[in-house]
Length: 381
Image 1 (spheres, rainbow, N blue to C red):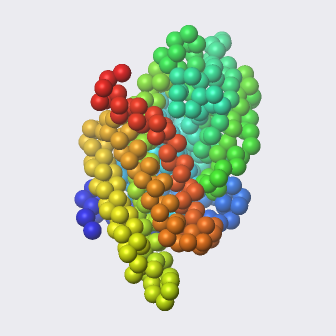
Image 2 (tube, rainbow, N blue to C red; image 1 turned 30 degrees about the vertical axis):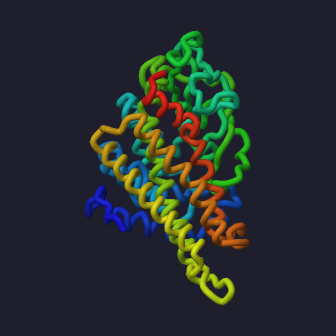
Image 3 (cartoon, rainbow, N blue to C red; image 1 turned 60 degrees about the vertical axis):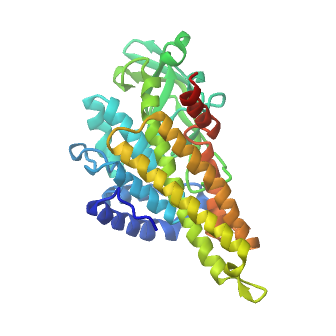
């Protein structure tokens, strides 16, 4: 209804590639992957060969040489198709940028080309059993030893945790310094003392592996420090606006998909001899849903434009994440209701979207944290 202007012709060509890949390689198998709790490793290498991983990384580092919009397109197409696995967004648009922005030349050359091929799967380990949105409360610690560090601690809710070959771990390196004593360390899956816990049983996102990770006195050589010592918290804060924008991107696409699925359903479903779409309540609910979907799209695309020019700040990203992810909950609930009993059946995509997108109000900083960030802009600390 309102034309999108953020994409150029090259982006639309790439979208066709991404859509074809999702329809061919993911949609037919997604139900089986939900039962398995993860996607096969072969999917990662297929995605790498198709150019869908690390799209915004420089070509000289094996990436696609594109921009943030290419990664956003991949996320949109996954959401339009109603799929949750795999964790391409975390791998390509969160982990890879940390390496690009803060990694040494050796680290970038070692990991980024392999990540772009899908030979290495990346993860970011921040959350702990006692520390979620409050990153400064983490207890995982790296102690300096001769030639490197010894890392000990536990992480939880880690996306790609079962499949990751490379994990960026947030840890305390100067315990008494609080947030100013956090550093980022690179852990490889083969490091002695590293262990994966169980693949966590979530209420949604069943095809996405999410795990506990354990670090038992893991030795890390000096070159596994990512970025400057004790500057990890600053790095995390610098990258969070993009992570929260990704939540807007996926959430808005999911909203648009659910509105279309619901329109189709109420147009076909008959109640008392007439299509459900002829009932005033249905028409008004759908009108509200469409208006809200357009509002989310306009806001998200404007935030993408700001991000393209380097102008997206933490408050703007918080506003976008709060609005879109809260809307996901209310709008999808309304759309599920319009499906009646069928809306509660797993075989209907609206049911899966309703469950899967509930997590968006928590991941990347809860809605309560977003409200606090916005309130600080309004009133100061």
